[in-house]
Image 1 (cartoon, rainbow, N blue to C red):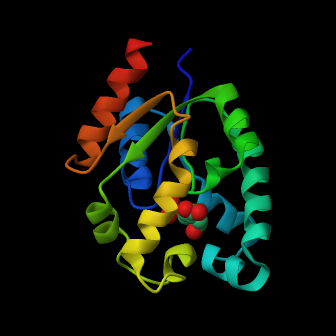
Image 2 (cartoon, rainbow, N blue to C red; image 1 turned 180 degrees about the horizontal axis):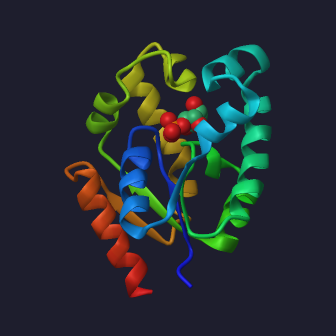
Length: 170
Ligand code: S3P
């Protein structure tokens, strides 16, 4: 039985766009963790950060990890900070293979240029420096993946083909 695929990685690396494509190709259901949290709590992530703070969001994120890890045959797109909590990693590893997507700072900057959707990035005066700082703080967390793929020059279709060939090799 092929495991779930759990996409981790920084904001803007393509977890959602490639994840959707991957789910399609595998015949799996696609779950976007942020969207699932927004639906369950009936508010957007930026609203949640603003009204209740990041710690509250992280609690809801952990609950969602537990819920989603129970599911079978799903591709899960996590939020960029989900794996900051080691417990989330072990929860998700029980039923899924962890795939980390990466991208260059320039690609991340370009793909996350819209403001108002990513409160953490909006909090930096210098977005590039903010991205570099967060990437550095998180590099060890992202290194916990079973497989890592640089998406800088890849389309979602190319990413999904590559991940499928990794899943088949196992
Ligand atoms: C976050 C990434 C966001 C979202 C929240 C916090 C992070 O998800 O979960 O704004 O800490 O990196 P995406 O990676 O899908 O943008």
